[in-house]
Image (cartoon, rainbow, N blue to C red; front, side):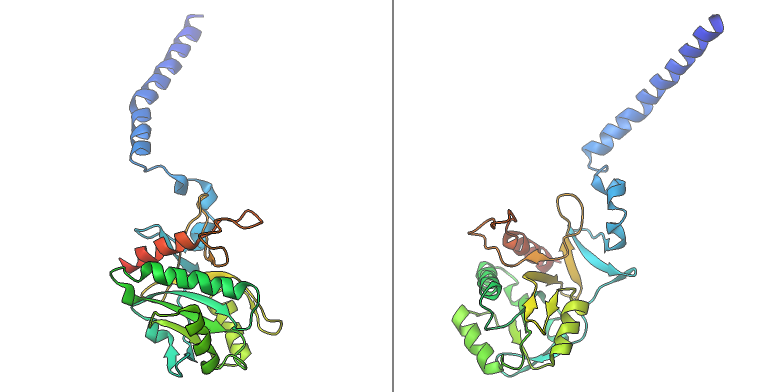
Length: 248
């Protein structure tokens, strides 16, 4: 009996010692936010897709390499040739659209104009831009794009509405280059916006569960707040992230 009692006492002593030494350290880590969701196994998969930065915005990784915008060359609404190099040094939003789209495109364009207007008084506004790629280059000529831009109030000199390439090239740029769904044959496309930093890398924040968002919903306005399916607007979030990248 005595041996058994001593063994219980020994175990109790070890547990007490563990609590005295390690529990204060764990509490201290929590207070200093050293223990966060990133420490859990739920982010193991996303860590293979995104890499952390000092900010809340991450880089998209493909096979361990940061995903950079591919080289492109299009004609804008003023008839000027615009390439990916023209956007270097600028934070910009990417969309795919066409001027005769009767459904989601007008909503996306209105939201982009709202973003433009929110940022116009911001220091560094000249380093912000938009790349709007037409998925119907045969009808969206520079003249048509110019009229469309004037109608919606496009005022940012770095907002280029781009056309002039075969549908196959637009398809590759959207689906492979920016990972944005586009079906150029059936005139279908995503209502999402992609965000690119000053060095030409795709960036995104994580959602509330620690998973990468990758893109931002471009259809729901700040005024609407939420759509019929219960999806919340992400324009406010996108503006915040543009501002964050402009400061980098």
